[in-house]
Length: 151
Image (cartoon, rainbow, N blue to C red; front, side, top):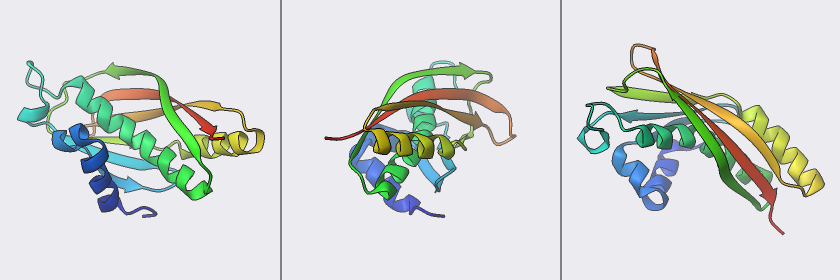
């Protein structure tokens, strides 16, 4: 593993406490892939006895954003990052432990190279898929990230 996930989860506690308290955790991170988990509990449920959609969104976004942060850090440049758009599809009730995986780190690499070379902001979409312990897809999230070299 290229990144210390326990350090990142400590970062969550201080910088994204709502995600931490809801149980979102980074489990794996390298340049191309990130995995997060969240378990359905009382604190993150909706009235229908499943996981609130926004909690799933936090876990899904973290699986994309952790890679963006990781690659920005590796570049050694000061680069801003922001989600500009997102969409989601919910295909099954989210109960139990949900694992979100994003394997699109190559998109970040390409965008970083372009923004560093040109100084122009870049946009790219990343997908994170959430599956339950049976391997059934419960939700799919897409996030449009924007990055730009800070002046």
